[in-house]
Structures are given as C-alpha cells and as structure tokens.
Length: 148
Image (cartoon, rainbow, N blue to C red; front, side, top):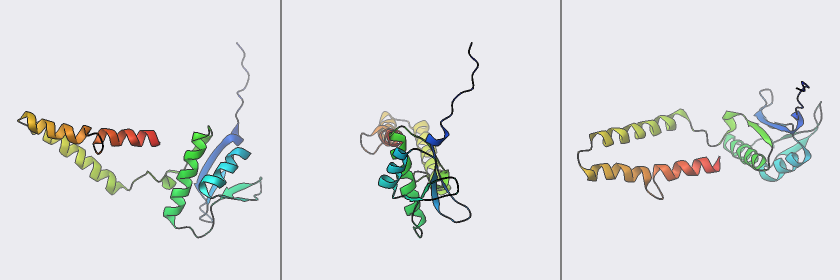
C-alpha cells in the first residue's frame, strides 16, 4: 500500500465571503477560468492583494444585489466543475426564519388535513396540493433541487 500524502488543489477551491473589515464581498482562490467566470457571471472585479489577486464586487451594492451576484457566480462556478464555498448569508435561496416557519406551518397543516380527511375527496384535495403538476409541492421541490 502506498502511503503518500494526498495532493490538495487549494487554488482551485473558491471561497465567496463578505470581508468583516471592509464589508466587501470577495472571492478568494480559484484558477484563471474561475476568475473569468466570476467576472462574467457575477460582476466581480479583479483586485491586487498581499498574496496575489482576489476578486470583489463593486463598492456600494445593496445587500440583495450582493447576494444575487454572489449566488449567481457560485452556481456558474459549480456548473463549470469548481469547488465553491459560499457563505450562507450570501446565499440567495436562503430564506429568513419567518419564511421557513411559514412553510413548516403549511406542511403541518397539510398533514393535519390529510389525517382528518373523512372522504376520498378530502384526501384527493390534499394530494392535489402536494402533487399538482405546476404549483404542487413536489414539482416545486424538484425545481429547487434542480436549480441547486
């Protein structure tokens, strides 16, 4: 058995985060291909740093624009085969706890309706909400998974 140390390609790994000191959204690491993707899909700018170039979003963007651009860039990088870490606070699909709580209440309500259903029509109504072709929970959940 060969016990050599593994090779880690740290530079190919891209981290997209928000610098706590400056408030800028920055991307660190990656290849030239990743840099190109950051610029084209996320609007990142190349900037010189103490350990080489890094990428940042322009100053003064509203938080929603920062989140949108960071999420878009991370998805493009992932699709191109790069390893990406996107800080959860910049992840656009992340929802505030209020939205999550509302979704959980809705699912609990559906489960209670299904349990309390006394007719096949009442069960069918619940199942229609879950599996409706366009606006049902299953197709919407599938769409979330596909886009992730």
